[in-house]
Length: 188
Image (tube, rainbow, N blue to C red; front, side, top):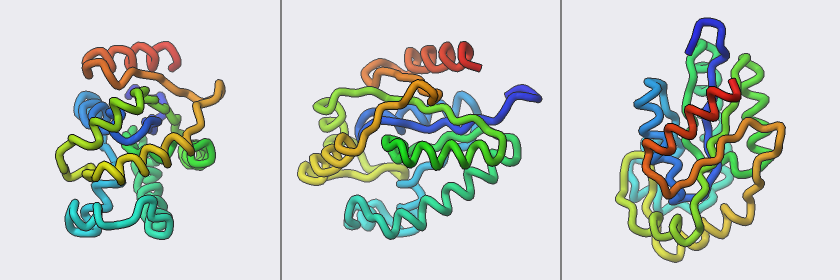
């Protein structure tokens, strides 16, 4: 980040299994910026992936509190002039994107949405076969379908006034990064 350039809040659109966290992990490392992930926070608060997997999805009351805490943390990072990656599917809905835009604007930051576009069948297969990590839950077949139904029912494509970069979830990270950097350079 240059001296006078606004810090970036880089966040994601895409279903579970689309490759959001795959891209976010590597992008955070390449850009040397912090990455905030709700499942990491949930696992830390609950003590294990198993405890997270046992909770209902979506867990509205719990998530309301969690996202207030995460938004506060993100706002403080941005306020310090540093960019941050917000690795979440929360921004699939327009209302949540609007809240995040307002958060970023309150600290003179810019939101960049990265839409990891992956066919549902591919994303479902990935969700069913992925390993438990400290930043993602595992899913049963039934829970994967419920989660996919929820995501696709609540997805709103970004509008023209939103800074969104669409990237295929089926290409290697190096190609994804090239698209991201190219689009970012053009738009900034």
